[in-house]
Amino acid sequence: MKINKIANPNILFILIWVSVIYLHSLHTLDIYLDINHLNISFIYINIIFAFFLLLYQLIYLKNYNYTEIIKGKIKKNYTLIDAYIKKLLIVYFIISLLDIIYSGGIPIFWTYMGIDKDYTLYGIPTLHGLANGIVFFTLSLMYSFKLLLKDNKYNKYIVLIFLWQIFILSRGVIMVSTIQLLCLYLLFTKQTKSKWVIISFVIFSLILAFGYLGDIRQGSNPYYGLLKDSWLDLFQTLPSGFLWVYVYFTSGFNNLIYNTNIIDPNYLPYYSFSKLLPSIFYNLIGIAKSSDAFEFVNAGLNVSTIYAGFYSDYGYLCFIPVLFIQYLSFKFYRGAISGSLSDSISYAVFFQAILLSFFTDTILYLPFIVQFYFTFKLKKYDK
Image (cartoon, rainbow, N blue to C red; front, side, top):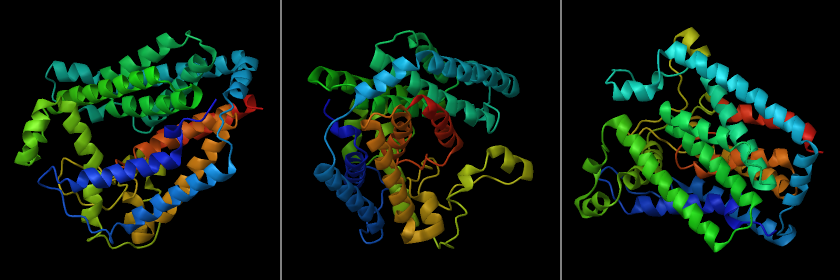
C-alpha cells in the first residue's frame, strides 16, 4: 500500500507552519502584530530541516507501507493485547470514579445547573493526567484493531469514552484523541476520494463541536469583538467554530512574535522540562506550575506554540529541541511504515504534537509521556 503523504511528519510540519504564518499575515484580528521575519527565523530553520528529511525519504526510502505485517502481529497476539487494553480500561474507570468524588460532580452538570464551578477544577491533579494518557493510548490501540482487522468489538468502548469526554467538557482530550486516530487512519488505510470526503466531513464536524463546546464553556464566542470590520461579516456568516479554530490556530504565533522582543533567556532547561514534573509536586510545595515565561497579547488567548518553553529557556536556539522532536517523529514514522505496531502508536503521539505545534508543546506533558511507557510494554507483542 502506498504511503499517504499527509501522514508524513515532514510534510505536515511544513504545511502547518507555512499556513500559520500566512493566515496570521492576513491581520484578521486587531491584536495581531506585524511579523519580523528575522526574529522568527528559527521557525524557518525547522521548516528547512523538515524539507531535507523529506528529500532524504524521497531519495532513499521506499514509498510503501507494510501494514500487512502489523496485521499479522495483532492476529498472533490478539488475546494478549485484548487483555492489556481491558486492564487499562479498568484502571481508567477507577480513576474516573475517584475524579468524580474528588471534584464533587461532573462539569457538564455544573454548567447546566448554573453551579459556579470551573471545569478546570475537575479531576485529581496528576492522576487525571495519567487517565488522559490511558484514553489516548487505548483509543489508538482499539482503533488499530478496528482498521486492520475490521474488528467492531471495541466500537462501544470508543463511543463511551468520547461521550464521557463531552460530559466532563474535556475538549482538549477530544481533539487530541481524534488527531491520533486520524494519524492511524492515514497510516493503515488506502486513501480514496470517498474517504477524503469522509475525512473532510469529520473535520467539519470537529470544527462545529469545537465551537459548540467553546460557546458552552464561555457562554458565547468572545473573539467576534477582536475582528477587524472587514472580516466581521464573513465570520458571522460561518458557524462559531470557524472563528474559534482560526483564533487558536494563529494566536499562539502572535504571542510568539510578541515575546521574541521581551524574553531574556537564561539558557537553563527550567521551563522546557517543568511539564515533566507532576502537578501534585507543585501543589505540595505551594508554587504555580509554569511551562514558559511568555506574556500574552490578550489574556484570553493564552496559547503559545511548541516554541514557548524552549524559547523561554534558550531564546533563538529553541529550534534545536524542535529539531530533535522532528527527528524522533521521522524515526517513529519510519518504524510505523516498516511494520511496527508499537512505533505506529508512538508515531501517533508525535503526529498530534506536530499538528498541534501551532498551539502548544504537548510532547513533554504526562498524558503523552505515559503513552511511550504503554507502547514500550506493547513492544513484546511487536516481534
